[in-house]
Amino acid sequence: MEVRVHGSIAEIAARDWNRVAGSAHPFLRHEFLHAAETSGSATENTGWHPRHLSLRTAGGALRGVLPLYEKPHSWGEFVFDWAWADAYRRAGLNYYPKLVSAVPFTPASSRRLLLADLEDAEAANALLTAAVELARQSGCSSVHILFPDERELPQLQAAGLKLRKDCQFHWRNRGYSNFDDFLSGFSAKKRKNARRDRRLVAEAGVRYERLAGRDLDDDLWHEVYRLISITFMQRGSLPYFTLEFFRALSRHQPDNLLVIAGYRDERMIAAAVFFESPTALYGRYWGADQDVNALHFETCYYQGIDYCIEKGLELFEPGTQGEHKISRGFAPQNTWSAHWLEQPEFFSAVGDYLQQEGRQIERYMEAVDRHTPYKTSPARPTE
Image 1 (cartoon, helix red, strand yellow):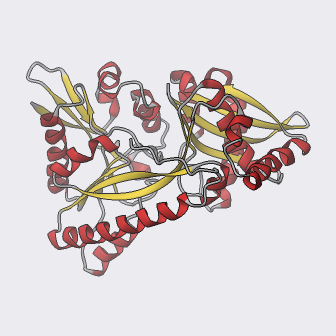
Image 2: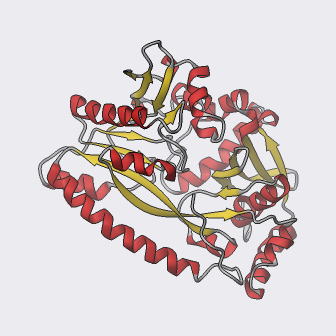
Image 3: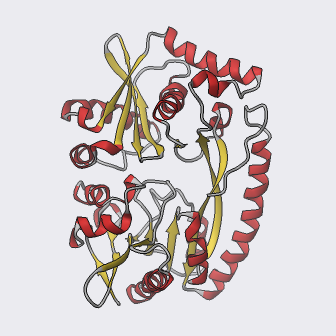
């Protein structure tokens, strides 16, 4: 086996990468990651220096890849390790740079060990061992695998990484025939509140259109991007992804893109950007330039649920955080990350912390389960 480090995803042929990545997750596609790099979104200049690992057989066939970035900060990861960095600083040590295996700016769980054979434990171990060795050779403090698929956890633990538990709020399609069928499982009060949300937006004169990737020309993307930029600027930053990134995806991944746009008086006033796989919908960004009561809930959540029911999609992941999602029918679901730190004292201390944190997360999820809007709280699925 031969492991190589790549400073650009372009160094690996798209057909080879996509063969091991599969088609289940749009974020793992070569086209997505290539657009992130070539659009100036995920580059060394923005603190995402590609260091992708590839593993090939003696005959040159691609056996597996590990998307990997060297980073001088922790922005855009959605797994928070600022306290660890501060502890290193107070101890007179450098936490940055570090190595991170993740999809840039995308907190969606999916495979990180992209293997031609999903049961190839030898290849998984070789890639993880190579990541740790690369960290040591390049002066990185640590290796972090963010939002891996739950089925990869045993491989990550076997390689010596420590697991971190967190949670998001996801919606599951339980064979609903329409939105009213979905709401029929709510308690009467919560059902009334959801219908009121939708009514407020409709009475404000907002209508919605669904725009697939192929429908979005440069002018439409300019308007959508203007709206989502408003949300970022209200939080004191600029969008992680550039306008050219989205335009590139319209050209190369049109079937994975969906924009739900809200119009008032024939002018686009709100937009939410989604990504679609054969089984799931992923909410990513949204923005609006008018203040309409419940507009966010309708644009980002209810419209997405409508779409999933209509298309028969099983899962809707609307993004990170946001306990306001609970009353709209989203339930807690575990997410994971895995970590290796070179400094043994810190690695041991972090391991103890992660065990305590994991117990707190579990108690939190149990408490949240008691506040879902459903008459009978749905069982939490095991991925």
